[in-house]
Image 1 (cartoon, one colour):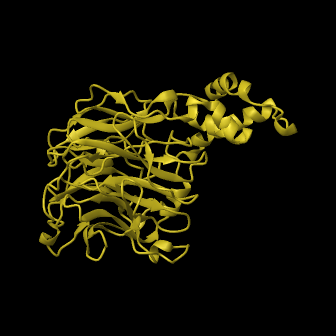
Image 2: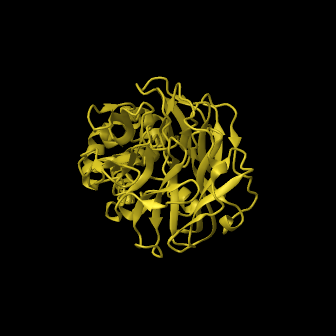
Length: 440
């Protein structure tokens, strides 16, 4: 995995560097009627604080459900099969990420991960970093990634394990464990029947093949581990099971900064893989998940002004419908009024980085036409010369080119809640054999 603390510092997802960001995922989609979506949104222009929200599939009824401290990011939400809980990860400065649950109305916030009183450096050698929660179909158990040990120079953790546990973490069991520093096992999700797990494997330079990413499936007893996507597709980004368990949804070119990628589906045995979307190379495509009725796919792509928003489409890629509209460029005057001139210009120029193919001169020309006339160049007696405006635009836009927009490994997820779903299987955790699977 990427180092948790480095992940916080590099929280800006490629092309998604605005103050309010909406990003969807794929976690276990329980069968049932379609209910509200859960998603993450940044709360500040510096993208240091993120909270969870819910919204109906038609875009109405948006509601904030977590209120993290400044500098803390809540992300990767997953609904319990009965729709009564939302699990998520919380990453705060100078500590490891931890798993929490909360009720859909924002009450009863509960920490699942054991408390960590340690401090940097090498905090992962003292406390486990736990992230990427997904509910098992019985609603009483969860599966997640547990990362411990030292961090290599290239940012991979020493021990990356997939763990199944009860909600109190009194009975936890490792299902898959990597060789030291060989790569990350992350973004895990259980099949609707609860007997198999799908997850993304990202190899380090010590893995085989080095630096490649693919989707794997394994039984919950650690047996029958097998890869279901070719290494050449660089596949992953929160694979999701269809509610009937027949398909696994994933995105190609996972390491490509969300550009030049497509959504695919494949059978859990690796057969009958086919492409769902045919987006242009400069379209931002982010994580996706099946709707609980299995008829649609909820996902994020670049929307208004090139900024990412939530969309929904049929499972064949047709009938695309936009659900949310990113508010930053809806009213640039409000952004200017609420911030210093420098900060407002930085926020608005950063947002333009999501427009595929734009160069800094394109952003400068657009900002000069749309934003410069709105600025009070003499606010409070302090002048804002045109050369400072140009420099602020260039600095904000070019920061992504210099690597400031490197994608994080774990992205916030959107998952749709079933209104009337029931657990599709009783717990099968007790049936697991005593042997763990070790990734090569």
